[in-house]
Length: 393
Image (cartoon, rainbow, N blue to C red):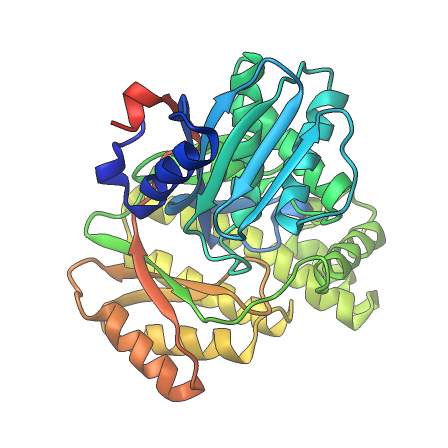
């Protein structure tokens, strides 16, 4: 698939083209685009081997790239104004934080026995960092695609998503589930993907006719490594062990009702969220299959309540944003999305409501004093790579 031309794609690839020619005195040979994602429902279920329903979004990480014949990697970030040069095989921790994701991908690909060759590139993106839209997973998949391009490795999106997840686990230190990497690799335009995070079975489901997805960035941020994300994962593992099951995916509501009274109250709440969220996510997939936006929205609302009360990963800003979205008559439902503690909410809305973004932003600002970023997004394809003459005009 070809990427859109620079004139069609917006300011990011235009800036990359200018920066690449300035830095390397030539045009890039290829363009790589890896999308961010928004998760419509199914939060904190992925690392419990459960179900999620994300979609790839229009904001993305772009790399203008040229393969090299040696083992040198030269990568400059326009967003951070930093350049890193290293020899593949000599990766070490330290230096710019954004580069840790790229080094981690190189490390796990080499460990998997894949041949690596160098490349030079300019990277930038328009995914808000730390907003819960998976800018890190997009960077990992963009880097993996660049390594595959340079070394002529056949592109296997699922396998590369697994390697990118391993990089985040073992190099970056965040024990994330597979969802973020998988949707950035495998997204499908116009569709959300119902993902089984155990089998990796993917069921593309079209968004309801006449409905649109709104991303509601609260303007607040969190850091996964420094947050209680890993703590929540450990709590889920402890709850699964109590029930004698490999993961909370395998614990039923009946199990919870029959034995939950003997479980530590905190772990009970965590388990209840995951178990009921898996049920909601599968019900939401069925609602999409039927084209029922209103039913889907009600499940989103229930998901947010569970995340706020049982899983305790919402925040004052996220709650106020969700409330503002739900007050608009065009909103079918809204919930926080991502790991929580800040970042974004997501809403399913009637696409004809042209004043949704402005009204919600105004009400949220009045309630919090914060300036949000509210925008509609289409569902896009996963990571793509195109030659200069195909994709960049």
